[in-house]
Length: 141
Image (cartoon, one colour):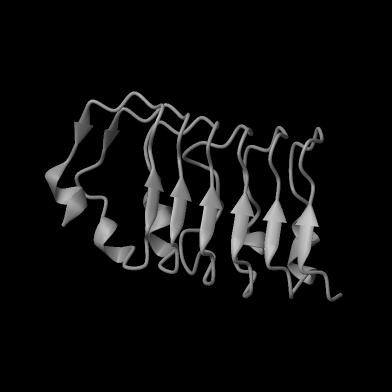
């Protein structure tokens, strides 16, 4: 299938079907305003996926089922309005990221071992409307 954009926003989905990996050419996956609590491993390895918008869901630290080779081409990731209490280390595997939105979650600190330096292409990091009280010096190195 040649589908490049799949918009499943504003539904009542609780999970994304495992067979999403059949959408090999997918570049945009829009999942906002659902009840999704995790992204299946099949979606994490889509080779051309550049945009993942999963705002207003139920995602937290267990949001993906894999930790390696995560979203190899992902440029824009919107995880705002979810239930993240900390930034998952798995996000550091998304080395192509240019924009990451984690606003309106429940972040209270940035872990010191979070290697933000892996995000060499990151231009926008939105952490607004959280409960941050500490921004670790290690994170910025």
